[in-house]
Amino acid sequence: MGNWQDNRIIDLFGIELPIVQAPMAGATTPEMVIAASEAGGLGSLPAALLTIEQTKAALDQIRSATSKPINVNFFAHANPATDPVAQMKWRSVLAPYYVELGLDPAAPVPAAGRAPFDNDYCALVESYRPEVVSFHFGLPGADLLERVRRTGAKIIASATTVAEARWLVERGVDAVIAMGLEAGGHRGNFLDDDMITQVGTMALVPQIVDAVSVPVIAAGGISDRRGVRAAFALGASAVQVGTAYLLTPEAKVTAFHRDALKSARDDNTAVTNIFTGRPARGIVNRIMREIGPLSETAPAFPTAGGALAPLRAVTEKEGRSDFSNMWAGQAASLAREMSSAKLTRYLMEAD
Image (cartoon, rainbow, N blue to C red):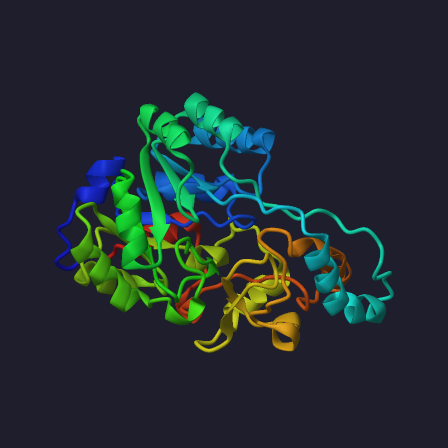
């Protein structure tokens, strides 16, 4: 495409196209990973919402269908200490919705969690040996990271600032994902929680390119070929695309989420912490408008989702999105319905 000449990511990962299908927990399926990798990009399996056995089953399915390089993604957060007071405050905020839906505000709620990378997941990496392992929210401890490195996997991670990119490179990552504020889903920030100072893709990518020696993967607001070209012009060696893959038939999304993506606008997403306790960009819905999008009462990640689960269960049965996260980036309206394989190739085609 155009004057793109940077082969560093292609050579590093052993892929044909500098396109990384973003790992989107809950929405990415093994079929999506297979299709993206078979088309020449890097298919990415998110493990944060999967048990060890579920991750193994997904990898078995992927490995049986493709020998192309794949990425397995993990969260590198630390689970918070139990905080009953914070949970009680959060339940009190949500209590009126429980009453509205005929639910008992005092009833026990399911635990909400996203599993951080640990010894068990590391053993899985050592067994399956994916070509690339990516991390969100920083990196795991040095011992775990070294075990991953010894498998031969290339290690990449998300940065939302230049400082985070430098921090990652100091710890030996092979490439940095420069995640602009436009990106959908959870922000990858880990050195600073201040959302006011988060940086957009156009400003972030060239500054990280200038600050680090490893190749940079641009992410955020890239849903068509124009975004890909712009990222390359800014110095990126590859792009990571997420929201556009949510409109593929391989994506596992609710009907109302898919409909919302089809009618998305430039101004109807926001960064919110109310679904998990950590900032993430999604399409604005009722709960975001009424108590958010950012709430000081939302308990620490990833526990906020537990009390929302009963509300989601009732309303989703009715096809309503009132209490459900619909992750999406600011360029969702530029996405078009096509298969994951076709999208991967389309992003690198000349006009």
